[in-house]
Length: 310
Image (cartoon, rainbow, N blue to C red; front, side):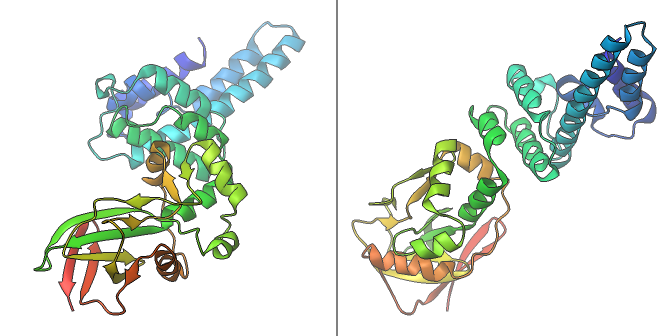
């Protein structure tokens, strides 16, 4: 009996006899045997090899291979458990979930080489999101997760922390449109971004990885922004647009790809000192005139966005 069978027995015993994991019965089909894998099963794997009648040299090689296999299984186990813990409460982890079994096999195979706990957390959250919404993970995400380094991950986190909310109001101050997205204002702020660790070489690597797209010269714009009043909310500060071009609001020099947006969903934001001033400087460089004083304030509370007149 091999490791998969032994681990499987341990997982089934855990589900049937101990009932300590509420969701164990729901995950056996797709994440079996990673969740519920016990130390006893792994120890038995090594013990069986040591007790075998293999020649000593073959036994040594088998034990070394077994230890590598066990390390990989432990990594997979940790990532599977993170997916279980971070996914929404009623997430279906069975074959009925619709998660592609071939995709899951490739994902878990690559996950076996991830030992760093922080990186495992990313893999686990991505896996949990896939079970929440099967087919939502971009096809290149496994490659990206396998290739991204801590330096690039930290740079990407800073990018995800640079967000601006565009809110349109009617003449009565009622919200008619709202758009939230990443705004990285490279134009007129290059030195500040370099100090933040977002040098062009780093950004270029993130683009090569497939997380971002860059347009350094002209930048990007949010089009079709219409309303009697247009407000920008940056780092908790609300400013009113007085003049912009052709109902367009510049949104920086970087866009997130589908993979980037997928990773952004599980990336915690951090405070970027001075970010609001960077955006204002960038807007002026793009011929967007901002009012010195605004009569409105945008308030964001969890998933609710509301507007108050001052």
